[in-house]
Length: 325
Image (cartoon, rainbow, N blue to C red; front, side, top):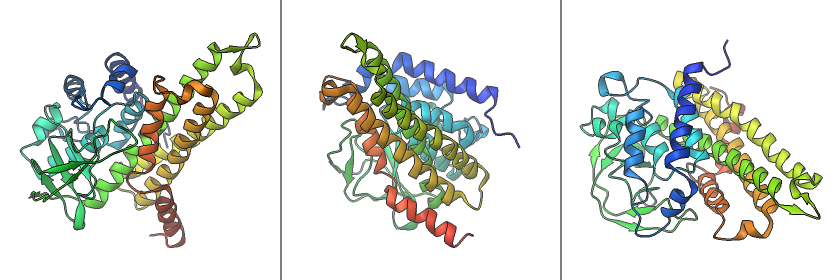
C-alpha cells in the first residue's frame, strides 16, 4: 500500500500555495472584515476555477477534473494556511459534486468560479451566506438549492465569514447524499484547521526569532520552544488522520464517518493549541487588532465550532468503536 501523495498531487498543492501567497496576503484577508467589502475576491475565485481547484470533484463531462477527496485535501489545507476568505470548503468539497451529480444548470458556473455556493445543515445559520450566490441546504434529511432568499446577518468571531439566518428558504429539491455532504464539509474544515495551525506556528517562529530580549532572540528560551514544539506535534498528529479521512470519503469506506470525526477531533485540538501557543509567544502584540495573528486565530476558533463540536465528534467516534459497522 502506498501511503504518500503522488508527485502530481504535491505539485498541484504547490501551485495553489503559490497562487494564494501572491493573491491572498494577510492584507487581503484583513480587508474582507470591512462591512463594505464583498467578503471574498471574485477575481481570485475565478483563478481558482481556472486552475481547476473549484471543480476537482466534478466529473470531466461536467467541466471538472474528475478527481477525488485525496487530491482535494492538500489544496484545502493550503486555503487554511492562507486563511482564504470565502466558502471554499462548502463550494469545492460539497456543493460542486452535489450540483454535478444532480445535473444542475448551475454546475458549469460553479466549476468555473463565476458564482460561489455555500452549504449548511440549518437555515438558522449559514456560513458565508451573505457572500454566496446560492446555498445548498441539508435540513430535514433532504437537500435544497436556495437562491435569492431573504436573510438576516449574524455575528461571528470571524468577521470575514458573513454568516446569515435565511428566512423562508424555499428552494429546488436537489438529489444527493446529505450524509456524504456533511462528511465532506467536516473533512474540509479539518484540512483547513491543519493549514491554519501550521501558519500560526510559522508566524510565531518568525516573530520569536526576530524579537530580542536581554540581547538574545526570545525564541531561544526553552519555554517558548516547548510551547511551539507541543503545537507542532499536534499538527503532525492530526494531518495523517485528515489524510486517512480523505481516503475513506473518496473510497466510500464503511468507517468513513468514524474517520472523518476522528480527523475533526484531532484538527480541532491542533488548531486550538496552536492558536493559544501563538498568542502567548507573541506576548502583548498578539492581543492587538493591528497584528495579523488574530485573523488566523479567529478563523480557527470559528472552524472548531462548525460541522459539529469536538464533543459531538468524539461521541461519534466512540459510537463507531463500540458498535462497529
